[in-house]
Length: 370
Length: 215
Image 1 (cartoon, each protein chain N blue to C red):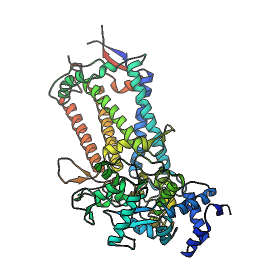
Image 2: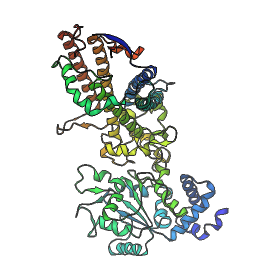
Image 3: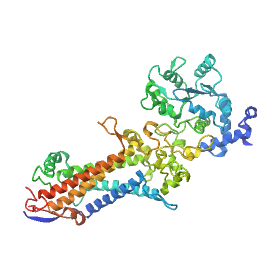
Image 4: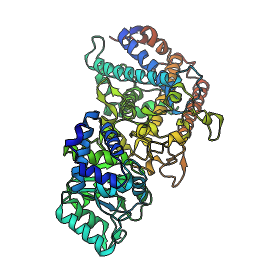
């Protein structure tokens, strides 16, 4: 066993004591290296990086305006199992939803992390920018973010709320909630944010980014939305298990139909897979059990900026069009096109009749005008 | 008034025109399918994949055709016509021509090659084509010309239009502009053929148009 000199017996014993067998731990390390695109030769290095991380650096997990769905997603993950992830592997010092400590004790832990610095700051939830709309222990969320972003070694925004505002920032957005990168811009902190956009975040992505950082000491390559290219480099559509039906032109026309039971493509049911970048079809959710399209639901585009407002009408391909100048009147692009074309056709017909009856088409001498 | 047959469109102009016609026809047809698939595929079919393939292929033809056309306007050995498209001059001449077609005037000043409304409409359609290529590139998830990462390089288009769903809507509505242009374009070419008896319609097939004798 080559990894013996990389991972101490003590650490493996400690894991075993907590109910995570060596075998399962190494399986997890293997799965993580596969997720990062490394060969299995790196499994010992991943294990060693995790062991080192179990001592330091800690992870500080801040909850802002969200439904804690990402925390849910985290504690429901079985690889690694939640207790180990929280207590040993990621060493999460502070997470409002799942920490045991409360009140003064918890704040002390937080203050100590802040003093030590060099932690990985994970942020869940959008940041209200309107005064008094989002406070924890008497402090504005945006101020907390400002304080903690400074000493952080890396900032990871998890879930669509933290990345671009998500559901809490949907119209009319009374608290003026924004994503972390925008909030940082507002507070004048100039720091790269890794956006793990999804609702909720896929824990495999989060673990992947954290281990990537522990292993290489650097952040993954990001796309123009600040999302790691390794997880957001391809659109869902390209890896979709129903893609064959799309290419063939076999579509579900209606929920509950025969086509749906045959697993046809959900394109006409408003699937946003063709405009959503994520590795959902491969990584899936809940320990790779299933994912939205696998369960027969069209993708709603939660991995993209502007979700949900700009992806609204989840079961229709395109959003409605508001006609400017007519207040709330909403129509579809199809109707606009058809009406414009019909008006043109009518105009041409009328003009043709008028031209014929005016005698223009007959008078040969006047044809050239001047 | 004496008239003569004039060689108005040489072969390269005509080929360029018909390539665009074909490309637009294929783009509109396949575009409608991609917008809302109207035929179901059977067990061995590959309908949507072919629609996508021909849509992209025709988009390249449309773009390259436009580039060739612009080059020809400046550097054709047959007729360098870029000066005919001066916007201000044509805008000044447009009301008279519009008046003629609305039966308010009995005639209008004819230009060398393109009358005012034509000279305004053609560059406008060129801009619409560029718009379609840009929005299309923003929606395209492959690599343009085999190496440009399309969706990353043209994401700013979607950002400007307010998101990819809206890029799709703009792309779709601009298609209707092209369709309406094509309809009006064909109507006017027929109307001129009938009223002026100058062989406008057939000139795009054989190149010859009946015009006033010059000099």
